[in-house]
Length: 236
Image (tube, rainbow, N blue to C red; front, side, top):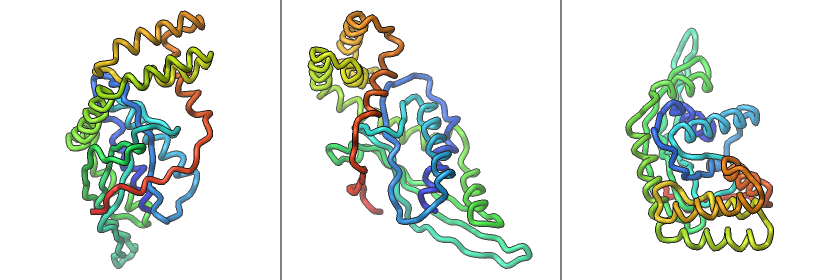
């Protein structure tokens, strides 16, 4: 139930708008809570989550990435109200996180208290989530704090990404070269250098610059990855 709530909660924010496309890439990484949900529901909600983050000016996907968005729950419980009809009440506090999976750091966190009532647990969850409105300032601020920390990381480390892109290009690995070069976000000190490298690679392979990001993401999706467990997020 908790994973269901986490994924659908994020989707409620899908209309939250950001005017700029920051180019910051987030891996959608729901925590394993030890509870089962229908696989088709899970898949649908994950797809909606990607839409939510993308609408907020970032890039979200299921493939492995350096930076992630995820969460944990606290004080989560249900109760039944007498009928007829019987009603289920869901109460929960959801804490969302943005962080760095490689260096095991949390960059931003925010908590949200939710309550919903319905004829089933699923309907109660949906009603609870309806309380969260598009354009929620708290959520937008949470994303902004995470984005600022990610850009600060790239300000210090962008040269390593460009070196990786340059080496991949020298080996004839276009997809890998594009992947590392296009990770440098807008607003980072190395952004202009990254764009020059992308243009150079595009000319070499006679590739349109507009396809550079998608080519790089496709390369990343094809890489074998172990199952990811983010076990350093704090409990509150």
